[in-house]
Amino acid sequence: MADIHVEEFYKDVAIALVQLYGAFPRRVNLFVEDIAGPDEPDEFGLHSKRHMACFGALLWLEEEGLLRYVDTIRQEALDQAVLTHTAFVRLSAPAPTALTRTLGQSHERAEEKLPPSVQEDLSTHIHLIRTALKSGHSGRISQIVQATFFADGKH
Image (cartoon, rainbow, N blue to C red; front, top):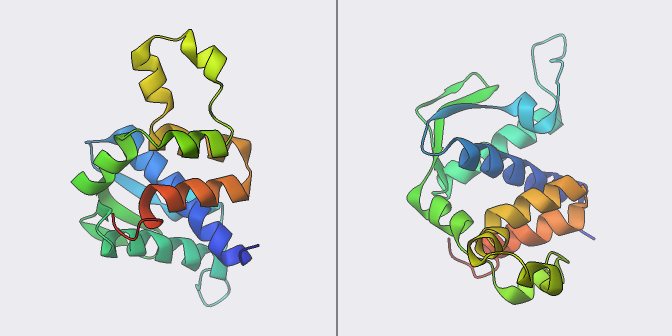
């Protein structure tokens, strides 16, 4: 089992990617509170560790070439964020059949009745990430994010 902060990292990454994919190619403000939940800074104005971990995950996505942004809005948001070409192509690509089966997303008999274009949409990495987020299962979320960007060591 992964450390809780690593599972939260994968969930934060998944939510951010889904938000950016849903807005693509528009630039949007990506707010930490929309990803990690509400935060009340302490009496010194410092955010919680959870908030800062999410903010760090967003900055990390940029450092790794998965998103771009114009500026930060304090430690609250990324201003005018957008997916990079690399991230957009990867999220739009079909996931390997083995991955869709492993994650329990493939219902071959039901999918056989669907038009090929719908079958393709249901097999994309972004669809698997959305489905994993809806399930709320942290193991699935971690697995699909790893498979989408990190398992092969390149992105």
